[in-house]
Amino acid sequence: MTVATGTVVTAILGHEFHYARTPEETAELVEAVLRTRYSQVYVWDRPCLSFDHDGGPQFPGGHRMRITADSARGWVALNYMDARPGTGEQGQLADSHNPQATADTPALLFDPEGDLWFPASASLPLDQARQAITEYCRTGQRPSCVQWQPGYWY
Image (cartoon, rainbow, N blue to C red; front, side, top):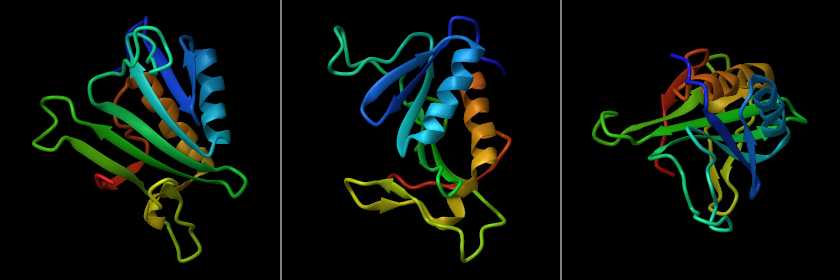
């Protein structure tokens, strides 16, 4: 599936909202996500809005990708959540899964305010994460180019 024309990708980088509407803007936004320690990405038919925006907050009903990137070391962990109707009793919640993870694969922080961590097995090499985030931005669905493991309602 590919998202229809008119789709807006919203990335929250830190606390700043950034938007992409074209493939070129999306590619730039994916690179910005990978340079940002903590971010969230939403794919919707309009821009997401924060409390600071007129008419905000506005977010799509129950789906997003959360990303922790340590680009200096080349690792990224992904969390996909979809709680829309039809996704099961508790919805879909999954963390990326790296079947080649070793004892040297770093665990990445999921939430710095709550001191919550991804398992080390969620850490993906930067290029793999780039592909998955790009796929999510294009389809609005959980990426199929990487493996997934059960996530937690952190």
